[in-house]
Length: 126
Image (cartoon, rainbow, N blue to C red; front, side, top):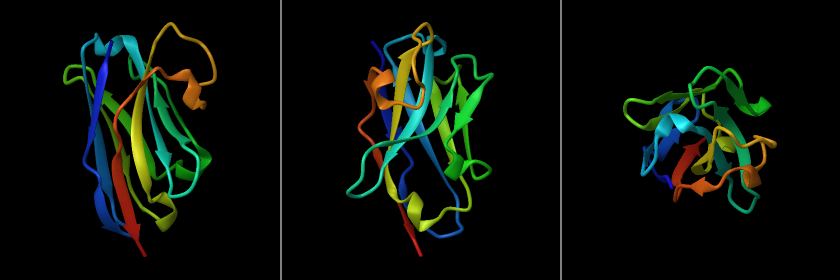
């Protein structure tokens, strides 16, 4: 089983940038597709981005397209989320998630992922 630990959250002004990271351990990292979700205050957890095990394909929720970039370094067992042009609506706890490459199902659904980190807070001040 894979364990996930997020880092890099913090406070940033609107229009600024931040990169959050998620370090994985306990499994062969390239065998897992990775995703970022977020949970704004008082709201449900929502999909942000997904990257396949080899890093060849990425998917984003419309609200972050052109601003956020998901990437991974399989040699470092780490997935990243680079966030640019941040808005106050991006304020949330950001979670990374993993699922085995062979699993099918809706990548946009939180229920498609079996492994989760503890989350990291991102606060965007206006």
